[in-house]
Image (cartoon, rainbow, N blue to C red; front, side, top):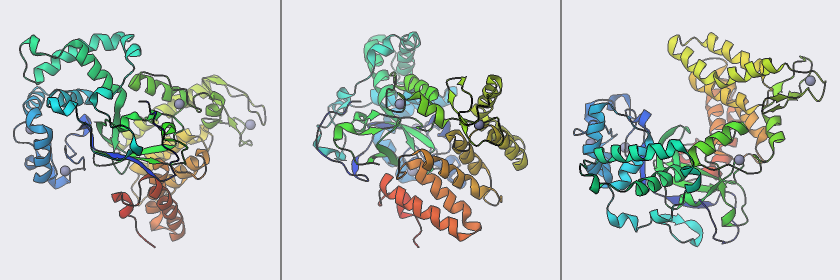
Amino acid sequence: MTATTKSGMIKRGDLILAEEPFVYTVSGNQVDSRCSNCLKSLQQDDNNTKSRCAACKYSRYCSSKCQKIDWKRSHKAECPGFKLLEERGFRPPDHFFLMLKILLKSEEAFEQTSICEPYHNSPRRTYEDLIFHEDEMRLSKDVMDYVPQLRLILAKYMGIDDPRDLPSEQVIFEMFGKVKCNSYGILDDDLITCGVGLYLNASVFDHSCRPNACQIFDGARIFIRATEDIADFSEVRISYIDRFAPLKQRQDHIFEGYFFTCTCSSCSNPSKDAEMFALRCANPKCDHGIPCDQRAYLPCSACQTSLAPEVADATLLTVANFSKTLDEIAKKTGDLVEMRAAAATVERSLHPMNPLLASLYSTLGRVMPPTDENAEEFFGKAADIYRHWLPSPAVDPLMGWTCLEAAYESRSGDPAPSRRYLVEAQQILHITHGPDHPLCRKLPRF
Ligand SMILES: [Zn+2]
Ligand SMILES: [Zn+2]
Ligand SMILES: [Zn+2]
Ligand SMILES: [Zn+2]
């Protein structure tokens, strides 16, 4: 993923690229609840046998129109393999589906680029142009052990019996590398991952945990838009991961997912990261944060109170498991009081501007019914935290979505905060999504 073409200034809000995927798939854990073509959530009443492909019983569709499009594009070839998967109850990882779809493509497809716009006069890329971190991958025993197995499983689902008809191990290794290092998680309007796609041209952009552009989607179509003014096309950076995760977590995700080590300005400044993910000072009268620096807890720089490392470790463990705990309570009893009590433990230990709290508030906001009297404040609190850390003006898809949720949640109460958050959401989403995106077109006008 290296951009090299020079072509002048890109302004905040400019569309850098829009493109259809080379291949994409609905996420395996959502195949029963989403249309395999447009990735939209299926309504409850679509949730019957009518919406399934009658042959494989694996893929589901929101309409016969979507089913026809998918059949023509790829499903006709993949349907027998999907049927085998469904019969054996085998739910392979998403990269398996992408590879299966690539292997079933016609030879001409590998010479073609995808239709995209406007892309600043850069040369269009084909499958051959996709690059990956080959040396790093060859050093991974797990990868090298996995590829031969993957090759045999793929052949089985393609209905290939004679080993000589299989693509070579080298071809499968390269395909796995290209898919792993270049795929994008496809997000829906609520920023929930609903699929994975490989984009020939959009894969040119490098990663930074402090990006100046963002990727958003309409179905499986990707849009790369500038969130800041960018001096040159070669300097466009997007974030492949959650930019609001702590440094160690970001680095692990990047290495496990893409086989490289991020050296962006955020990752090169661990003390800034430690400041962001601060714990609350043990002195209740002090509102200063205790920087949380790779398990080394320094005394509070304002009041010099020390925090016991075991207390800090226990806090971080609670935080790490919080989403799971909340999910479990929601499933088991759905008890709102219990959920809020679990959240309060975390709130008491983290500094109020810690981004981990923002994700906690978003999780709470998603599970709490809007009728809950406290629900409205959760998204507002999350927005305050993101705004605090983002470069001003705070333009980021997550920030825009959070403001939008805050606006809707607070409608039941005082109309003033609703309007404030809605205006902020509108300003952000017009840049991150563009005025023509369905999410922006749905926004109410004052
Ligand atoms: Zn559909
Ligand atoms: Zn089928
Ligand atoms: Zn980074
Ligand atoms: Zn202090």
